[in-house]
Image (cartoon, rainbow, N blue to C red):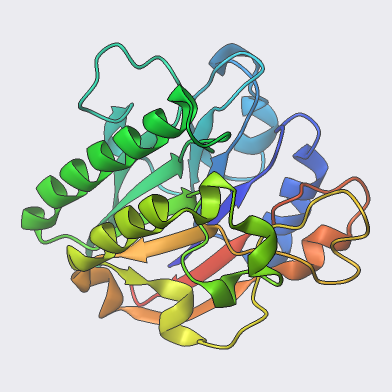
Length: 261
């Protein structure tokens, strides 16, 4: 089973890119973030025509997550538990049945948190605490579990071309990184790092100042795997070439292969 995560930075603007990606990679599941549209405005029919079931949690002009799957998505959860007042569309989860069992997949758009020292940073940390609690509650199910998404966290210095440029950014704060490690320490594996521990692997390049051309990027898009999913991990790659397409997203897809039929 091939699963990918991608912050498309507006699904309407990236629809052709999405079609090109799925046709060239034969994806079974694609988790999307930053749709920037409500559910009713999502280009459902166009994506269904590519062979996918579509489940969305949209929000006008901001946020929004989706899961596209060749097989139906079951046991769907819309929204991250722990704060009934939270109206931001940042979490979508469901189960996909396969010939060798099930896999539970989540699409995550974790808050940016900038600027630090403001309620936005407090919201980021509180959201991460909710994610940690929810993930911990899912692990006893003993299913292959893949938490896909834009985490807006640079885990380590080697995940940034210029770490010093990010020391005052919410993505690289000690508190953000500590909570990311807490999530990992529940028993999750960073899929990409399990397959490739080299520096220079990035998933986001700013649109300004020729960042992509200079490979001045950061790695903030991650797929975290439960033990059952880690046991089935065969490969993990960054689809960097999509950043060179015309009018690209500032993020690129990250893709894994699991040994699931």
